[in-house]
Amino acid sequence: MSGAMPILPAQLVGNELLFRALRSRAELDDKRRAFLLRNDERDTGLSVKYNCSSDDCENEFNKTYGVLSLIANQVANSGLGLNVIPDEANHANITGVPHQDDDFNRAMFIAGQLSSFALTVREGLRKRT
Image 1 (tube, rainbow, N blue to C red):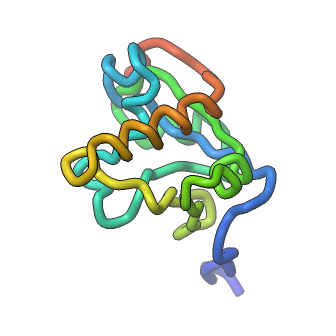
Image 2 (tube, rainbow, N blue to C red; image 1 turned 30 degrees about the horizontal axis):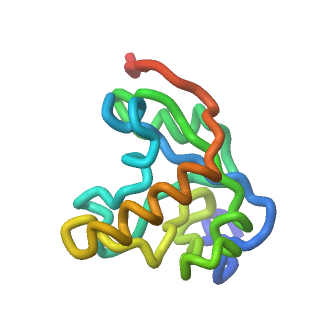
């Protein structure tokens, strides 16, 4: 059936590679900032791409400062109470992360833990033309 929505798993818990775009210079300078909830993520969780390339992740934005990667099972098995919930064939949200305005200490702790798991795929300013 053409155009049918694929059946998504309830959670990503395996070796799926997750990508998070660095959207500001501050996120490039301090990778923990990349794992703080952005205001538009408060209701959904940290936005990550999966089942795609790091270039696909960056192509969503006009300007990026790099890409970080995580493995879904590192997040799911971190002991932090986080889940990786797919909502599209190549997009998921890491849930369980508080916004820094709601619980600054926990938000920073989780951001620090996630950044310690993350690998840098690419660094530096990239503008889409």
